Length: 446
Image 1 (cartoon, rainbow, N blue to C red):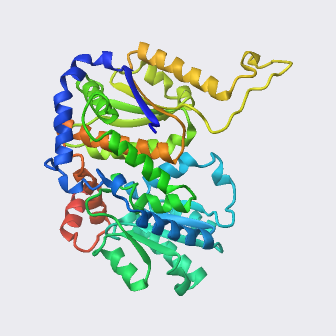
Image 2 (tube, rainbow, N blue to C red; image 1 turned 120 degrees about the vertical axis):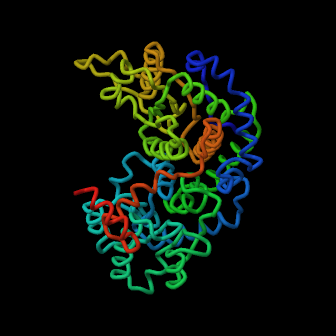
């Protein structure tokens, strides 16, 4: 069942010539992906991933999640970038908005995240929360030496072993890592942790439908079979290029707008549950396309909240932006606005209406205002927020990203710029092996 749709009618007239002229480039990009003859072709494992995930793997993930759910009040997912954003995006989209304020329930632990920053207060306050609590760890790292998650895992492992004992702790730690090599693989083998493999041909930002994302999502209590089924359905829908392929439409439209001078894409949502989905999307597109001095800058806003902060800039600022709106047709809960006899707030004209009806009119009114103000608008409609729809949306953005990157003329599957800060940080910290770099950077700072 198709759960998402795309509408470009309020964008295409801003770049109609470019859109009509880039169809051949889109077809060529599809061919590069499916023939595996484009740059980065050793990282195309995500392309047919949804349809190739075995029932046995999903069953094993669910059993691991059930063990952690049985024995933990908290499950801490340790990872950075693609090793946490996908899981965070899905869990946030499917959870109660105020889930963080409810305590963990038996067999229903809270999934927390660590290793996505180097915040000293964050780490110390997480330790304080977990002190005396039953918790488990899912540590996600291909190498096991990435600085941020390595620091967090070392600290949390020490705390867990202290509280539960070393023997019990090994059953509460799961490593998602390389199949054969790396520090985390070595440690997991030595300690006897259960492990899952990060496929060599799937980059981190495309890994949400591997155990990297599926295990934390299952630990949070959500149906990973439905998530994968939704993605597999979109995989089938987006298999071939054509005017009815939503991934091609999106890739062509955003490239046409880029060619016409629109350098910033703002992902817009009108549902607070989609905030972290936008964070995942920003990494996917920013890391895939921002290279060779090219690329649309991915930004995001939560509306209507940010209309009272960023709305002025979007409406009247430099005309280098376009919007892609995520619109959810039907919320899971119905709530109507009551009537008030005094009507001091002047909103009795809304009495009896659903809150979502007001939200939808705000969405439509904003679209009209922004388009009139020179901001192209792409609209992606989701029937509802559930596992199946999110699976479709994840694969939709992944496939469109691969097509769009090739259309742009970059390798969508590498990230050479990410290493620059690491080299400087290692030099400043005087990491062994970086002696020359340390000497050079200290001279630069004099």
